[in-house]
Image (cartoon, rainbow, N blue to C red; front, side, top):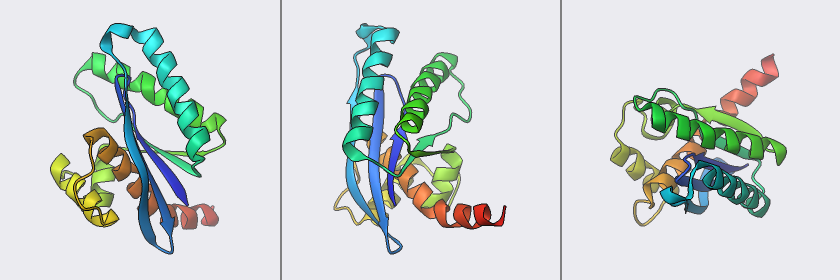
Length: 165
């Protein structure tokens, strides 16, 4: 299973790929797409959409795991992340990928074993789980890898539950 994790954002959108083979997760690629604030919302969203579609064609993931906007104090930030998340969900669905969403607490629980784990703890666990020589950077990409790892951990149970329905 080849999973593309995406930490959505209009100005910074992190991505990370994990391939799961024989119960072991291997990192494939990670990075971040950045857009300048001066561009304005419309052009930034259009550029993000184009970047996402290019990424999906280039990587051809089986599954796209996206952070679900669970709670946000800053309404402006919540709207921005919501717009980026919508683009990710639409582009992934149009590319024929299975699309899943996880809350930050679900990701932390799956990767670090504790739903209230700190960002640094999650990043160190991503490093450990993937056997990386150092903590993955930038932080948006590390979060995206954590999303992909969360799905790799959750997929077997989801598959079994789906078979029971």
